[in-house]
Length: 264
Image (cartoon, rainbow, N blue to C red; front, side, top):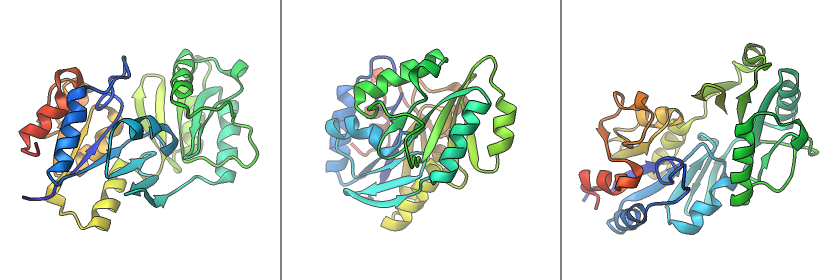
């Protein structure tokens, strides 16, 4: 039997974004596919500190985090790219200058502006999630020597997005996640580059690559792999771009996809 490697997004793919619950069918399917000799990897925009909750509930062979800026296999870190202290400091100044809310993300934690300065309501929702997951410990953008890997931004009515974009368009890929919400990853790093790195490292044939996702930041990995799968609850923009559309996350979508490809 051929050895496949499957890359899973987290939010909306493995975890219901509303209930924050992992379906029991997904847990069972993941365990079974690995028992059958296939490799299971998380491939997420979350940085490494934001997946501890997943690690405690599911077993994976490895993790690609922070939109390809971090790769881990069998508990060993094979790749980690941070922005550096100078660029991180420049970002903080620019976020303030252009009146943009955001979350700076590193492998060690997530960092927010001072609470009283945050305005966008979605930032508080994300903050509460980070608190519950343990990745936020009260640290702000103003910590000495802050060095992060990536960030997300939220636009307010008075935000100067064009100014911010023009300053950093040659540094980051701007992934539009919603009307006022962007995810920023350093250019030349993505979910796809993470896949390329690990399959080269492990010697996995390209034809044995699979990815399952549901949102716009999954596009790079879905376009890259040989076998692309969209969840039934996906952003509709994915449906014409993938080879297979599985069921909704709460209709045993992960299990259905792995059965379709005869991995379980």
